[in-house]
Length: 394
Image (tube, rainbow, N blue to C red; front, side, top):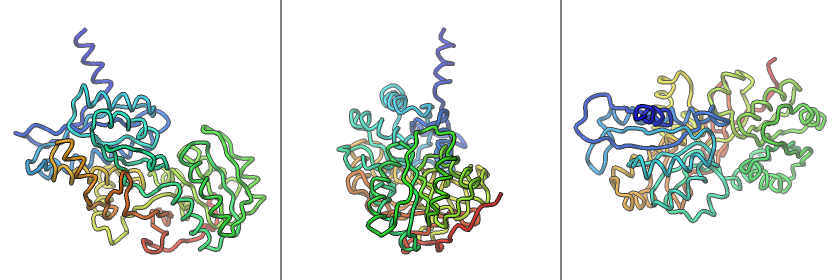
């Protein structure tokens, strides 16, 4: 029975020890849950890759600087099965049973918001990553911070400005019935109307949709200048496939969540070129000298480019935690104060927080050009100009 219990514990969660040699110091144990199975597993894989690479680099450099003392890093990872309720239970276990020293964040907005109550109950600070929602601003939390600038009200307003700058006069909008895409739509529709852009198609669909043919036919008939697919990875793939099948010719095509993930480039190849998507990071932004080394290291280790949004944000969250621990150590009160008040040097430029939200990084959009994610908006952050989508390869 004892052996069976040990086996079950090992199967439920595993520890990734990144030390490359013998260590005199006790390891710093850093816990997290991740969507390793379930609907979000494809997206969660890249985020876990980023954490593993970060831990490996930290240990290769001599360990994590804990207020002046170097200690090796161990990652304690559990599969939350893409279930926010399971994520909350896992973070409580990490804090109370596993007694980890630090936490890294799960994948996606639902899991982040599910664990906020746990963090507040135990006064355990954690830097968020792949979460973006208006709900961020309503949180009265003191133990979580969000480095993303992809907040729906800013996204809606700035996407309308970008389309207007490209001469868009009409737009079709398809929205999955999930909170984040619907929040973007809530601000996008009035913004495009105020910009003089006519909404010629405005439809919502349920998660798990298997066929968008009717919508694509209607969009093709309306012949808009722009199509905005406010989608999550599964239905983003479906949009890409069926927009190509129906030969949607809109020169401005925006697909919200998914194109920045490596498997999109593998799946769609040149058809991903000139698709606009969410993202506020590029390795080609010369103002961020740490960006290209991260990109190169990730690609060398995993044989693919990192996700330009979620993987980059995961790395940023680890950078913030690392710099805060170097200053404050592992004391939770000191660590909380260091994260809340600091300015951090990251692959995404400087990051600092106003409450729980990043106050320095502006809303941006990426476009894939020749297989690479480039910042095309706003002009102040642009790594290359926008290019209209001219068609699809069969």
